[in-house]
Image 1 (cartoon, one colour):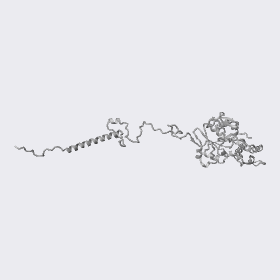
Image 2 (cartoon, rainbow, N blue to C red):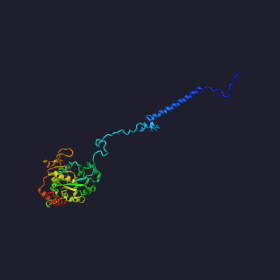
Image 3 (spheres, helix red, strand yellow):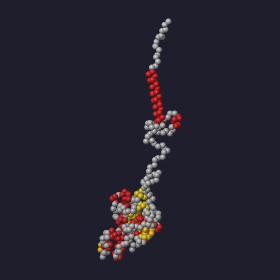
Image 4 (cartoon, helix red, strand yellow):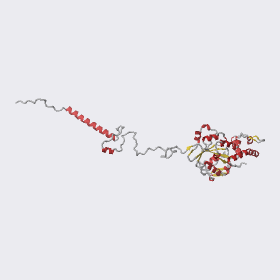
Length: 367
């Protein structure tokens, strides 16, 4: 009996080789992508070179959270911040500045301040000696040159004046000296406008001796000037003194002092005796230190008498620690003056001297 095939679909044929290959490729591609993603994620969290500029996503597993309690930033080239425990980089130290670690401040210690005390006069009275002596004190810093601010350079302004001053600490006093201030009419008002608390030092000397010393200095620079007698009198036979000559006018201390007393009380003006500055420098400088409100540091031990120059010198100076006398311009031998001329000048100055003594409450014994 013949066999009949069942009705319906014919039996399925075996899969073609091309289909098997396509499936294998798809599986391999999927595995490759998965491996690439896994590697990429590991590189990101570990800070590898291919990591993007973003922080790692937080781990979800509890174990991962425990390990990542202090997460590190993803890898950054050239801009990674140092860990908190790392010490900051040290900057090179400025030799003139404060020690490393000090709070920020000026490169040099101290500040330039306007002077709290000024030696205002008088010329050829002993102002240079006072300045050099007071500079020995550790609480004083003084300008060595004469700035002539309040008589010649006032238009330059206070900031220019301040820039000339030495640097001082809070505990130190700034001092300058310009002897021509005492006879400059505008100086008292200008100094008062700067500071009404300014302390003033005036070094005075017998006006006759001072005038001869003044003339001697001028003669050394201008040998062809007229004689002392010729400049002193308008009419010698009548005894008329020429008060327009600066060497004579400066010695009229009482007249000039009136201008200062319009702005400053006597308590802010200290008068130094030029004569005692030679015979007792420690005593006179002790009074100056008291006036400035500083401790008496400058004493007899700082001075010795120079017989050649005829006045005291410092055993050690502020800068070198070696003995120091004033310059060659100090201690010149005075020109010889006719004794009769000297007597006439004493008569001329006598009323001015008496008024000066009465005003300042001190007898300088110039008679």
